[in-house]
Amino acid sequence: MGNRLVWQDRYNIGVEIIDKEHRKLFSIMNRMLTFLEQEEKSQWVCQEGVKYFKGHAMKHFSEEEAYMASIDYRGFETHRRLHDDFRRKTLPALEEELKQSDYSREAVSHFLGVCAGWLIGHTLTEDRAITGKADSKWTGLLPDEQQIAMKQMIVRLISDMFQLNARVISESYGGEKFGNGIYYRLVYGAGKDKKWEIILAFEERVLVNTIGRIMGGKSEKMNVMLMNATRYASRQFVDRIRHMFLSDAEQYDIMEENLLSYEQLQKVFNRQQPQFSFLFDTGEGYFAFCVIAPHLIKEQTATEIKTGNAMAEVRKYLGNQTDSVKKKILVVDDSLVVRQSMKELLDKDYDVTVADSGMGAIRCIMLNRPDLVLLDYEMPVCNGAQVLEMVRSEKELANLQVFFLTGRSDAESIRKIMQLKPAGCLLKSMRPEEIRKNVSDFFVRNNAGK
Image (cartoon, rainbow, N blue to C red; front, side):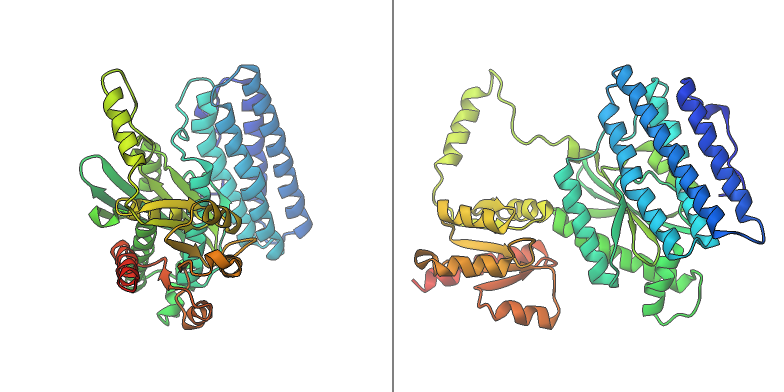
């Protein structure tokens, strides 16, 4: 990061109240950087410096939002969302790290690095967009429910693969630098118009303290063997997400693989902002997961009806509505990604309905009894076991067939699930064709027994 943040004229956007506060924030961070270079340091001074920076940042956000509202800036809501992400998630997470380390030199440096990277990137893009001098990079974000589903999936995978309890500290990671970074890029393609560009950014100590330990290494730095192990583990991590999120994941071939410098990472972000872009604190260091997939926001939910196609679309729609031959499947999961993936995977051969909670599942079962329920075992409020118990307590539903969905594959978890005597159990990590075969085999067996 260097020892100083040098104010440059390009940081001025031409609005005095905003430019003045930007210069003030740069000045505060430079004073804290100077303090870090001193031999003796006081925890109290660090605390006051952080408090002073936070106070001015909050004041700046408030003034900037008031200015945007006064000029009816059309990107106001998105811009405020970025502010909220930083002040409600990123800053509190950094403050917690400072407290846990008693304001160690490393933690304060980390705090300044993340804040400086965020401030510079935000100023050069989003703030300049207010005056029309740049375009906002955050115009292609997907809906909140999809963001939430992706976050939950990544947190679960981090726990499963690395036994780390990760938490989200930013939902709009813009390529800010944090510590010594390792940046890994994978590009997958399926045909001309579908491409997933995935970037994983690791703080070096995350890899040393997880993959390095698994390998029995004693080095505190990355080496060739650890880097190659990281590449392999990253590919496995990404593949699990792709197979959970994409029903046609097998059609995607890997097109490109790169290890990026930080400068190259910045170029990627300058070219195209991700649709998913999260920064996690794993407890062992920071980790960012980003997906650039513009085709996701171009897909239509349905064919637009116009004068030329109206009759054909109506006939097609009515034909689909009257198709009652298909077996009915209810998919119950609190993850939007899982619900969408399952629906896309099975919708061609079955009449698939989805529910996002245990109580929602009960309503769906009562109103439209399915032939098979794919039920998430782990859900908040009313979990899969409780749903199954309620279903079996109703005489007319006692024979309803249920497959549990689970992300846990250890023997003890599977034993607990099978004690409930479901019709079957599907691991969420299964490949799509395995899931489809299990469902198909169930209906074959079920029909044969009648």
